[in-house]
Image (tube, rainbow, N blue to C red; front, side, top):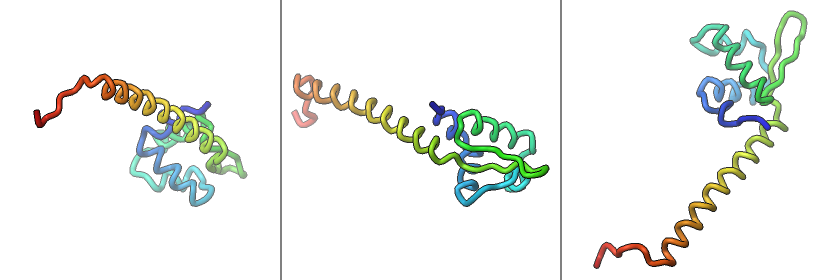
Length: 108
């Protein structure tokens, strides 16, 4: 399962994904869109590749990157389930707290 938090936890990687949603891009096109070095961009691309959120293909001497929409959709679905579980636990705790009456009304 992709680590969506690792992949999307950095603004550069989010910008790369935003670029790729417009269509496939070469590594050169991606590098030119940023004010950081080619090796730094390559590290970000490698993280996105490791998490299977993008794909890389070779066309001649060019590396072409594209979004892996199926993997991205699955990762986001898993993230939403995880978040829902966290919120459900919090709501159960709040419900139990309120039902026990363990709170003070500020107007008393």
